[in-house]
Length: 542
Image (cartoon, rainbow, N blue to C red; front, side):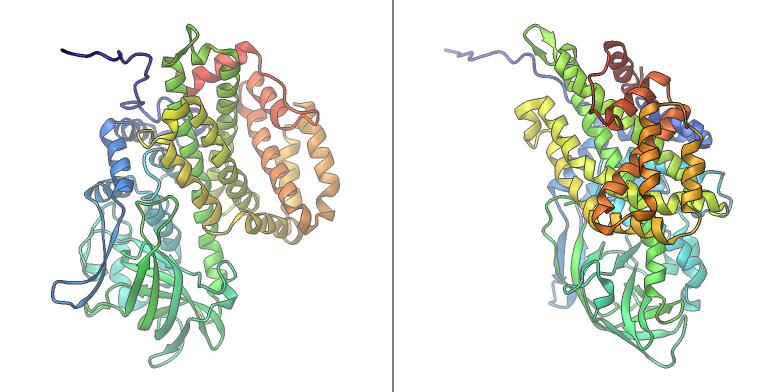
């Protein structure tokens, strides 16, 4: 006898085989507006590839089968290598082919390359986040290395600018592609790198480009399989930056001992290690004592990538939720047609509209280093973006998970992985408090910041009464900002910068709705039906 207990119905298909770029109308528009239109064809092509079922499965596999530390080889000799699932390597080939690690540093780079790279970054973040860590550190390191790389490593510059992913254990000049990691924090200090105890002594003479013997440890040594790392160590003149290759110029392994890989909440596809330096050899970059100044500029670039990555993951969580809501029925109607659900999804779409416009505006600022106004914009709003967008990601993904209900909480869905991956961008390269204090430091100490804000915000003065009221109130308090108010100031500045972009360029109903939702002192109000329809259509590329 055959028993039939039930028939499976009203269970939505998972989202796959979609074009991650063309389905995102706000991103397409922002790319054109901010000068990245030349990259549209590439983005459309890679958006289709990344949205495929095959790419999404690679993202799942890379996290289901995390990296493994191999301490010894079969003979018992010390090995200190990290072994990855093949899915990781395929994904790394993709991010390197998209030049997320070097697009903006190409010798004949097209105008506004930072805008195109930001769009590419957002797309790749929707598939797998761990593989973004190696490329974001390499991207931040390249301009420093182009200026200060020791003569013994000049052969590294060409492969650093290649689009190949090369896993061979060879000296850098013999490889087709290179990746650079970072190792800054130690057990006793974390973000307070001035307390670092790792020491460096010259092998022969002191000075830029010279070799030093390094003894110490790193509590977080990101991407230990990288071809080289930039690290901080104490010298006679203070904290200094060193280039620490995995293999020495003669092909011998450097004395970097991997003690263990971190067992992390999320970002599990990516290896993070604890290491010790037992007479490792590193080459001084710049002068002794300049380490903090050097890493601050690199840190700003990686902080921007944190915001881009969180935004991309939020976009993916929303897309999954919206696709589910279009299929799942409750009480005879699709979820997306239920008034309360439709309101929530439209509010999420509105939030993404604002973030997309703001982030690509910030990318434009990064692409114009010769313009003081743009430099000031990037300096102030990069830590603000990292704080606000990365912090918003966790509740945003949780709301998307609720749309799916129980199945969204199960590992068969993408959402649990997205939720676990979210906190790392708030923590890495400076937690929320560190970002807000940085914003306050820029506001109170850097010249030209208030003038920059006046130019940005006065350009839309009179467009929206909620914006005008918030900017008027904040401007009166800028000169009296105190540390305990750093969260509030950072949050309000980010909201005003986002609103300014929408008031300049978005459809007026969308800009007005955003200002009512996040700037109205009386609190948010429900979105009108016509506006919810418009937002959801734009969010699905219709």
